[in-house]
Each structure stands twice: as C-alpha cells, then as structure tokens.
Amino acid sequence: AKTLGVHYDVLPIEPAVLRNKVAVLCELYAKVQERTQALHASEQRLRMVIDGASEAFIGTDANGVVTDWNDAAEDLFGWRRAEMLGQPASRVLLPGQDGCQRARRRDGREFDVEVSRWQVPQSQPPSFAALVRDVTQRRQAEAARTSELRQALQQIVEQEKMVALGSIVAG
Image 1 (tube, rainbow, N blue to C red):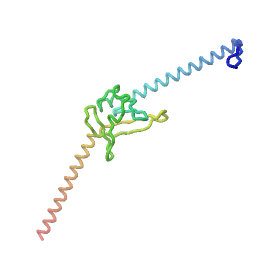
Image 2 (cartoon, one colour):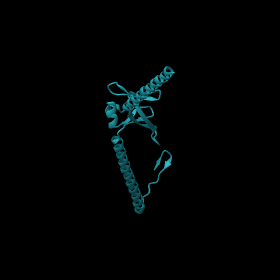
Image 3 (cartoon, rainbow, N blue to C red):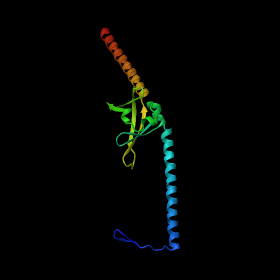
C-alpha cells in the first residue's frame, strides 16, 4: 500500500517476535503501574506531613496564587482550604515593614507572623512553600520584658541620682 509517497509493506509478524514484543509491553506497563503507585504513596505521605504540621503551610505558584493550604492555615487565618485555593496569597500575607511580617485573618484583624519561605526544588513551573507562625504572643512578651528592663534601668538611674545628691549634701 502507498500513502502520501510512503510505501508500507504489510508483513506477517512471527509469533515468537510478537510474544517478545507483548512481553516487553507488559513489563513496561507493570513498571509504569509500580512507579505510579509509589508516586501516589509518596504524595499521601507528603499530604500527611503537611496536614499534620502545627504551623500554617501555604503552597503557591510562581504568581503567588495559593495551590496548597493545610489545616493549621485554616485555623490561623479562618479561611477553608477550598476557599483559598486559586486565591492570591497576598489576601492573608501582607507586605512586611521594619523586618516584621504581617498577616490578616478572615475577620480583617492583622497580626505579626514569622514566615519561612522556599522554592520547591526541581518544580516546573516554579512553585513555592511557606510555613507561617503567629508570633503575636512572643512579640507581646518581648515588649513587656523590654518595658520591665526600661523601668528597672530608670529606677537605677534615679537611685544613682539620689546617692550623688546625698553625697553633695553631706559634703
């Protein structure tokens, strides 16, 4: 038979050759199935780690669109996973100022967070992941400690002034 200038001969395939080709195809199919199952098992393990994390996990694409969101993120921000998938991460992660990162809850309240970000290795197109921690209580404790230290320092300065004044008066 001739088609588009190409000549094809239809020749019978020897049964032994056909059996070998079928065996190779079956072997390839088995390997594909095995690797597919291994991939699914790996994805399930990763999902368990992400969902079990105590910190909020946010996965994004190169445009900052949310592609993953764990239970801790639901608790921290108030948005369900299904509500945030496909939304810009900037809906909850705000630009930082003075080295502080801010975030916004569903109800609009803003709070201090610490964010660890990284690019997912070998992801094409590039994707990114972030762990987010609410540091409001830590910052409040630091501010309270700083205030206590300032008050203590002020008391020491006042005591030193009194001692110096007493020395002058005593003469």
